[in-house]
Length: 294
Image (cartoon, rainbow, N blue to C red; front, side, top):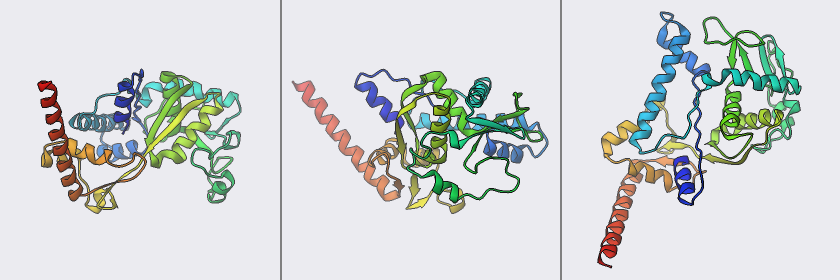
């Protein structure tokens, strides 16, 4: 979807700077690193190797689909010092607070929290239980900095060793590369809340205007079910290319649906896309012959 948007904007004569940030340290990566290393290798090194493995795989698959690289592809671990300064700014503005080695964003200081996802903050708070060990002031407060656990990747900070929360990296990298206010922020529809909602809150809390427009794409299902290995309905891009020999069938499937709507993958629909591409090629061939004859 976003590759298409970039191509269209360039076609219309706009100057486009396309940034795609990479989360290369988070809870899921660390959990995978623990599984892979099994205590035999350094966890920080294992997390780095896990991140590289899946990023390389992603790049390979995008290449198979003919989707080019972004103009910039920053990694979260490259921006730790700037994330720390961003968090310090939030604390100076009293929009964040430290608690037990962690740092949280104070949701009460957010302007119109819930406006992106069209939710009411009081109703959201009513639906969340606060656990006894929770050191947050409000159940909706979210982590900007997490205290390091034994053996995990960590960095020095004014609050002790730790690592950034997931949300902070996006605000820091986008404002550093694109400026405090930029045109379009994209992502899957599943990221609207809480991820993108929290990005807005912390960026505005730091005095930044952030994104002017938001574009959220729908999700992919397989035969009307969520795609998952556990359900046995999983197909990789590599498997698709091996089977059909043409990435355009898959791309046509995605582009036949409005970008916000879910896309349902079925063998029958891929057959329809194959026929659709054949009609395109007949049309292009006809145009070529007319142009050459004129």
